[in-house]
Length: 192
Image (cartoon, rainbow, N blue to C red):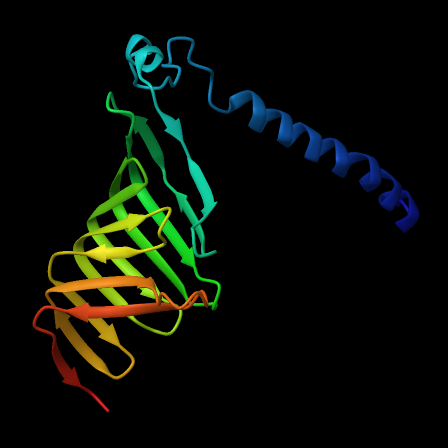
């Protein structure tokens, strides 16, 4: 009768060989390669892609006349014949010298000179808790202003406001402060 040490010695050889044989069978009987399988390619026209003028992930940064910092980023920008351009999925940040910050996000934007027209779901959020929505905002890269000539809905820390016009502008005292000015039939629903 074989001794225990003899059995252990045989198992030390047989078990690894059985595992190796089992793995080999799994790899050999696995899925066979299909030589006619489709290779994934992008569904774009190379001619159109080569002729199209666009910039992905464009970024603009600058300083306005009153010292406010402005930065604009987008998903894609396309130049137009008039010297401006259009962008998609745009985010603009205006940070005044007094620390007041405003973030504007929009589905699309266009640039004409120093004016950026932000539309398609334009939304402005300020650092002090205001959230303003409007059909479009017009931002100046030199004056450091954000204006909406159309109806604006605002959610403030103290309630809800509706106004016919809105302007975020420098206070004009040379201090670098910015003021949020709502006008044109302002309605307030106060929520203490």
